[in-house]
Image (cartoon, rainbow, N blue to C red; front, top):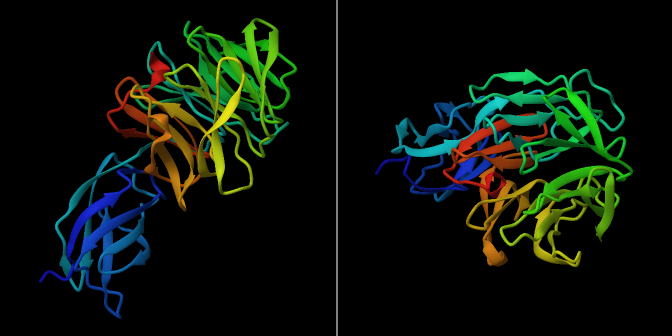
Length: 342
């Protein structure tokens, strides 16, 4: 019998560098000398736990490819390998605090280097071109937090330091669009192209036109940020991370009435929908970190991407999931289209 055993499954189906995966296996032989290993992408993975039937392994930090192989080793023997999909790093040395955004004109990706509140960094906005080139945007915004495009293709960013949302023209001209929005963080547009902005202090504002805003809903304050996304039902879904390990995703109807859509997350942050109505949330779920997927009508939830310090995500028209940690951006070919591109 092969001492390295056999791999039966790997969970969750996707991961980025640093993410913890669970490998279900059989007949994996452990020995007192520690002469056993899990090899991911040709690199020896750090093991969090191991038994004959289950292994908890960390995706190597320097792994930077979408397709990879996983196999086990024990006493010089090796198991058959299985194919696994990991994220390819597109950029690092950033400071992202919410979802990135896809430019509907050319599929490039807008990301931020936000900085601490009130900290002015020399460059705060970046564009990742489709060929992977990271370019600096001349737009000067203090503490850009959330970024989003409306249905007309205009780019907007919130400034949590000054409590405003700005429109960015041609990547350089910054025009204040609405002010006095508290600690402005999350931003989203409904099917009528009306803007909604989340104030970390607890208010969600509706911005119907230039300069004019009104209170739409009031929730509990967040220790981090408000993150917003509209579902296929045109209701507004919100996360407001707190200090508990059982935080909720809220849903707010068109009249501003809210209810808890799903509970059980630790520090839920960025969120996005696919066209089938599944909701993806950057959070800790059942002790695992990364991105969880909630089925339509909140019937069930499971981890979809393993990763540490994930703060946001979005989808490209090519079916890629763009995953943002607080420092880096990854692309994972998941074959899913999101509603942001409708």
